[in-house]
Amino acid sequence: MVFSSLVFVSAFLPAVLLASWALRSVKARNLLLLTASLLFYAYGEPVYVFLMIGSAAMNYLWARLLESRRQSARWILILSVIMNLGILGVYKYAGFLAELWNGCAGMAVPVPRLALPIGISFFTFQAMSYVFDVYRREVETQKNFVHVLLYISFFPQLIAGPIVKYHDIDRELKDRRQTLKGTAEGFRRFSFGLAKKVLIANTMGVVADACFGANTLQINAAVAWMGAAAYMLQIYFDFSGYSDMAIGLGRMFGFHFRENFHYPYVADSVRDFWKRWHISLSGWFREYLYIPLGGNRKGRWRACINKLIVFLCTGIWHGANLTFLFWGVYHGFFLMLEEYLPVFKKEKKVLGQCLSHIYVVLAVMIGFVFFRADTMGQGIFLVKEMFTGFRFDFEAMRLCLSLLTPLNITTFTAGIIACLPLKEKIGQRKASVAFSWAVSPLLLFLCMLSLAGGTYNPFIYFRF
Image (tube, rainbow, N blue to C red; front, side, top):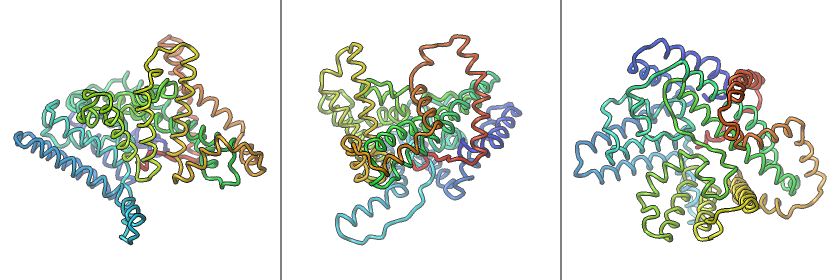
């Protein structure tokens, strides 16, 4: 089940929300939300729901063992990391590694064909966060397994984040308030997130799929640029929309999740981009990998190596494909470059800021071409066409013109505007707040019409 479905919006969410309001104690609400979360996951993964429960139980036991065996805490932590990454590796990377080994060694090792459990990367990282926090004594060991399982399986952030660290939610698992104001604010946030996904990301996804799925004779510079720009908008509004919906849903039930996106396409450096993009993932790697590796405490060169390791792991986290590995190293390279070039450390004037924004948009766009491409060869071909394919081939121009529909042009324009921090410029003026409250029911209605029509409705981060 996904948030952008009629089953969720018109049946599952209202039922759970009304039942939660009917209950008074936090304990009863936790049991309700746990049951609802397991049903939510089992709706699409009736078998792998037991894998998620097993992962939660395993990490619950690791944390209890850390509490009772502090003298062996380091080894217990290492074993827990190996077990968690081992489970993730079996389901996500076993087939890729077997194919890679066969290709390099010329052997015929059987390639495992395991279905990828939905959201396994997200709930595994959340489970590891709990063990890390107990090891560092930032939280007390949770003796109530219901709290641990609810933390890992809570349906708003279960299948696509944001990745919630245990120390950020520990108190609200035990004591929180579900208020009418919070529910209303959550509904508004959910409506805007759903509109991002259904009205913008889905429309841009049609354009991106047409361009990336075209044969080589249909691709020139215009088609390549159109596909790259459309995918850049699709992935942002798909993922940030889902994060907005998750934050809104959490707010409805009394939870406060941290922001996961902050206008990343207005960044003036790749470093700044990663402070704004998928903040929960970059924060997780910074807190649990970059800082333990030494961070920037051991000199500039060591800091660069640590950043490269982090972004290599970021690429691996996203998927078992050379395109993801390249994408991670690619961003790590730009971070190293910015560390050594003084131009990125100086205060920029208007012209310098404009050039910096252009640089970031181009760097991120090219990176996303490889992220979206099925193979490295396709990624290289599309990037080459972006800068050299200035041909007016009939097939390419026909594809290009067929995608320049009024709907696509309007959606693209709206997407560009929505990428800008206009809300921050307007602030909390009464008119803007009143407008957002008035427009949220309309957006929800338009989304329901679109979903009822059975239109194109993919979800990019399902495969992660």
